Structures are given as structure tokens and as C-alpha cells.
Length: 121
Picture 1 (cartoon, helix red, strand yellow):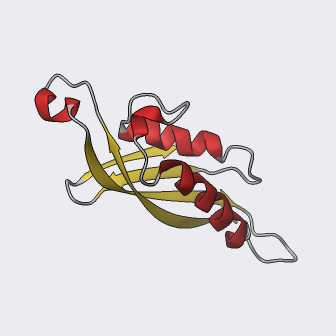
Picture 2 (picture 1 turned 30 degrees about the horizontal axis):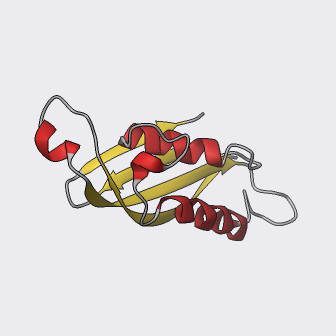
């Protein structure tokens, strides 16, 4: 049996973006409230009964949130252009050493209805 557990977090951040459409507004510094969800899939441990201790995942997400929350995303090392796709990849790479590693990362902005999902398995 495979179980999927997940944890969500949010961060507020600013960025600029070079775009072909809505270019003028995107080039100016502007901000969003981003939501992210990290999912981990695997069998439950026979002793603990957990896929992963969610306390460990929350700790890692807290450290990751500190790198993003109230920052200019343009200046976050290794992020690249602040797209939803790059945010998913940035989060996945930051957690890739976890056992088990994330199976899915989703980032979205409720205010405008945009989202991106990265499936890792």
C-alpha cells in the first residue's frame, strides 16, 4: 500500500517578470501571496505507522519558507525567474534529500487563480 501525506505553507514575496503579455505591469516590482503544498508518497513504516514524521517535514518547510517569505524572489539564489514552475522546482530541489523524497509539489496564488503542479514520481 502507498500513502500520500502532504503539508502546506504560504509566503508573501515580490518579484519582477519579463513577459510578452501584460509586460508593463510584470516588469515592475509587484507581490503575491503564494501557497505551496508538498506531498510525500510511500508505504507506512511498520513501527511508526507513518510515511514520514510530519514534524520533520514541517521543520524543513519552515526553513524553506524563511528563504522565500518577504523576499524579492529575483534575488533568491538558484531560483531563476520567479515563475510558478521555477518555484515548484526550487522547493523540490531543496527537499530532494529527504527520505522519502517529495512526490509532488504544488504552488498557487489564490488571488489570481494560478497554479502549477510538479509530479516527481
